[in-house]
Length: 281
Picture (cartoon, one colour):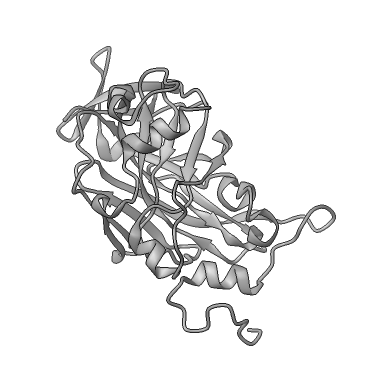
């Protein structure tokens, strides 16, 4: 399956094709994958994510899905890349990983059927839909700061075409330990359905990204942690967590909170004290 990566090469953003352990630019320049400075593999005009899709995640939270999917938007300023640093702002605590498959649009799509949707998909890449749950009390509807804060949308390492999404394993690792272990077969709505659903009212342009949902066991990570998302046939997206250099300002806007909603979401549906605030630490 062809794989395309965008890297920073001699100061310029360059599209390359993977050949074994090397990336080859259109002019013939070659760089070892391990030495490459990666960029997000696509430049989307928008990133749209489904709230819940994997059945294991739904079961974890002991809820029922609606009849049709719901979505939120991640601004493009949240984009990040393979090996990029994920910034947890100073003053925040509840930053969670969510390993996912990202759908990349290849042709302008509007008012198409699920049966047609595959013709409008360029390929797929790996995503980690990080959530800063400290802002969940104020942004639970829009998810804007929860999911859209800077650096919280890493994609990569490359765009893979001719990939069949059916029956593929998805795993997330923290410091080498498996923390999420799922499959695309547990998705309630498949890739083609998601594209067709959004394109009913929102025009999708080449490069646009749809995030397709995460399996169970999203949990908080800490500065210094290394988080990897591996999808069968798409590769492994690696990032590390750092603390932001400045604290959240206190003279404007809502402040980070540790409510029951924040804690029960960040710590997962199988948390024994779900919905009950624990003693202050």
